[in-house]
Length: 147
Image (tube, rainbow, N blue to C red; front, top):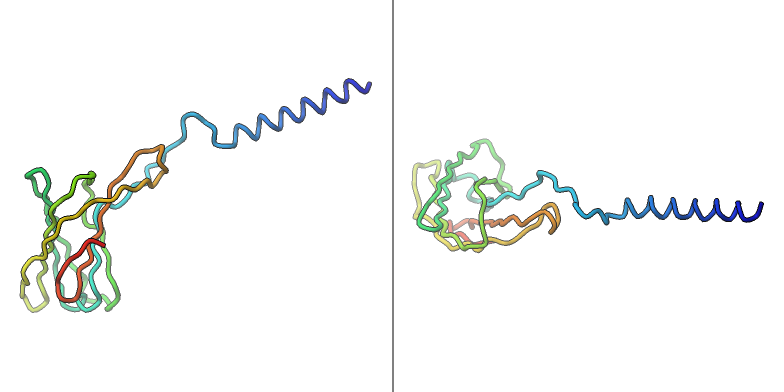
């Protein structure tokens, strides 16, 4: 009888080890979700929020440019503001950016220009590919920097 009991324990331990191994993430084909990064976002200083009516961001790469314009809500409060601007993917290649604003008084200050160097991110982990993102911070004086 003792040999059978030992065999049952061995089989139980092996079954538990197999089950734990299946849950350990050793799956050769990890699952990737549709989670993605926001390619470009813009942060405006609180002082600009009361003044800016529309903002356009132009990105140029490989001789082609893309422009996205957003209208800001005039009822917004003076807190830091951030918005997703582009949904077109970025690459590791630097891009030229211009930020243009129209104020509530109708003025259009000179555009802020900068070179963005996108950063690699892995929203699903490194096994699911690389997204590239950039963030622009616009100061109260209208100058723009990469955040």
